[in-house]
Length: 272
Image (tube, rainbow, N blue to C red; front, top):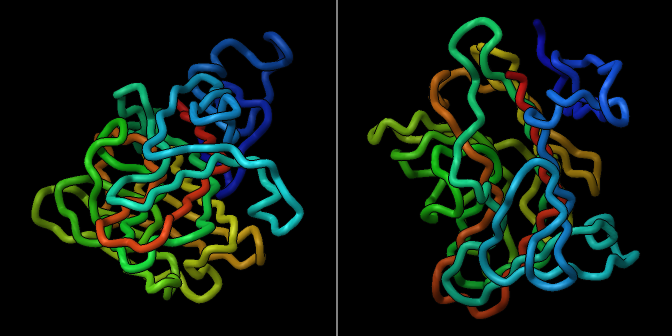
């Protein structure tokens, strides 16, 4: 059994990667729905996240859903904006309290495809920003962490740690850690095609086949078409480690302006 290509999120998800079920309501077989989760940036029109398919997410900090405008791709996309001027964590998390994502440790076990769409609209100038999107070995909002230095959590995703003054600098990093309490994360700059900014809509795809020895990633700047792709096979979550989605930015104290972090989509497929 082989996994999908990076970025493939099929409309019909069958018992195996890439198959189309022939029975079931609307062409989607019953077993599909305990292997597929989706949220498209929906709220109740105010501050409560809604519109979940086979998942339950929670948000942190003040959330709102703006009217899309023609100003840019980011601002024309249906999304939830999380805002803060004080020390807080802005973003979305798995709200079930469970960690369900894993690579698998035997043939036919584990495997996943995860997609997140996110971006910034503003920074909190002068405050530390610890941003991470991907998978982490803690459930719910948990505790804020610096993804580039922490050693206790197993992680795999993209992010950064910096203090904008007032603008961001540099590029997104691919970050992974085994979470053994002593080994520092591996942090690799993804290059100028994926800069950290307050104008772009980004898409992260993480894909692993069942019992995979590596995880493939692609980070795409949907606003410009720039991207970075590769695989992670060392200093990353163990094959038996269960993980949960995290897409958030933790803001430190001392900021002089209001930060805005947008999340537009969460999509997850579990193979087994």
